[in-house]
Length: 329
Image 1 (cartoon, helix red, strand yellow):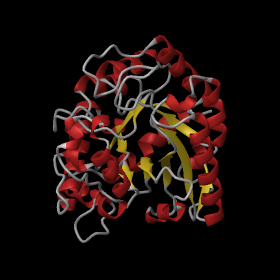
Image 2 (cartoon, one colour; image 1 turned 120 degrees about the vertical axis):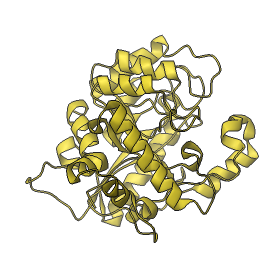
Image 3 (cartoon, helix red, strand yellow; image 1 turned 135 degrees about the vertical axis):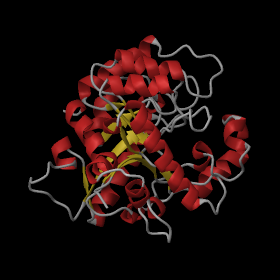
């Protein structure tokens, strides 16, 4: 199994979150974890980042991200492969509190990826659930410029179609979709169009395929193997559409699945019917796509479909690492 670059997963957004759960990923991985989204203030997200840093470093199996070379050393370089590299992402720009100087503050704490919008319109632009799509605002365009300047991925996941296309147009460095699948294979507003994928690839960026049941069309509790095969379908589709060098993994695994499902049940007005009508959401845990659950994992499924060792290594980490070397400072 190649080394793993996991571009987005979600611990409980609570100071009591157990960083030890990240040990379910193999040592030597790069792990980007969420520290906040639309409901959070800068103080909320900063407190979580500081607590997560303390707990992860105290665990001993993790170290905080510095540069791209440390996160993913080139083959043959001196490596520290007995620890995993931890970085943070924000799933919305609201935790910046409207102050773009906060990008640098969060970058110092370990932020390496940020989405302008989470599902619905905010000061930066439109989300994937908005019925009217006006794209990035002037503030949103300024935000992309600051992300480029500081060295943080500009991420189009959860954004509207036009917002995603605007990110690709405005960014002067590669953009990413950290955890987005293809609408052509499964029509869901959270999945991206072929035009979005092509625009991302034209910047030199990468699209991370996720394992969420409602975005794959396999949301039953007993469909773990089907979800892994569907992830492989999206990888194959993306490789054909934009090239294997633009596809990666961002599983969107939620370590707080019960809490998220409770939120869906308690606050259905916050999500469209495309989220709520499926009942309990199902995620693909690392054990499933790593092949530790009694059925073929993603590496085996891709190998059986003819993807070479080099192709699989690129998808499992090399592609996001290449883009990090171009974006991060």
